[in-house]
Length: 364
Image 1 (spheres, helix red, strand yellow):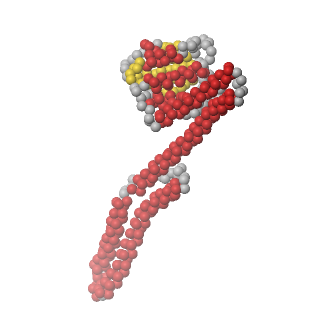
Image 2: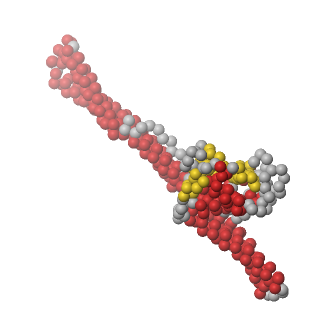
Image 3: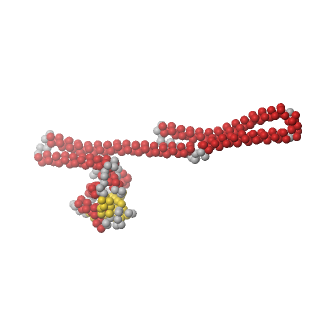
């Protein structure tokens, strides 16, 4: 019941009590007058008796009416004041920073609706605070990771350049060796800066895509053939025969695949009885599913959920070749920008499989 109806019902009940008491008093007077014995006495002393009865009766009517109305009002006041006290308590808890305090809600009146809205506000406020804390944690992690990734090559560049300036590299051959290291470290810094710039553009939705229809299998086979020219064992599973058309930006999707190919080469094992890299394509649930598998060291189960997080590195004791932790994060964002999904699983026989699913625009 709404508060307006409750207050209206309170007024009507008070009027009803007053009417009931008045009717009861009138019935009592009628009974007294109609009684043969009392009627004669009433007739003889009508003025005095009437005054007494009406005086005491009026007081009784007012008293009973007041008691009844007070009881009805107190019930409604408790109904209103209780939720208000709980709402005040919840507001004070939130003011003091306790976003875990839950405000119980029930009923269908305005106060219940207010309590429900207040609880929704608390939940959203809590979520926003948690999101802010997560963002701050990620920012600190990113700054620490960037500092780490910058420090090593900068230290090398400074060391080798000072070696050249101080004459430590006494021969032309040694000078070229030092210069080669400086150039290599400078390129790694440039790659890191480029990756950070790309991530910033992706997160701020400032990276336009030049999409066009592509045969996903032919596209992957072309890149693989160019990249794996020197690899001893690469198996391309009928990529050119699938005819699965996807809408992609060639440059951006090539970056995704090349990053995965680089990881395959980095972590592969020498050829044994199985291919070092296996690439296959199938149509699955309306998507073109490209799977790139290697025979490498695999990924610890605890690391799998975090591989696409920025700057996340798998256990370096198992994986001493770990990179900057940006490549897979960029790959995921680029795939998602194409409306697709990317995920990684461990192979039962060893190594991992990277799966990329993109919407397919033909029947296959």
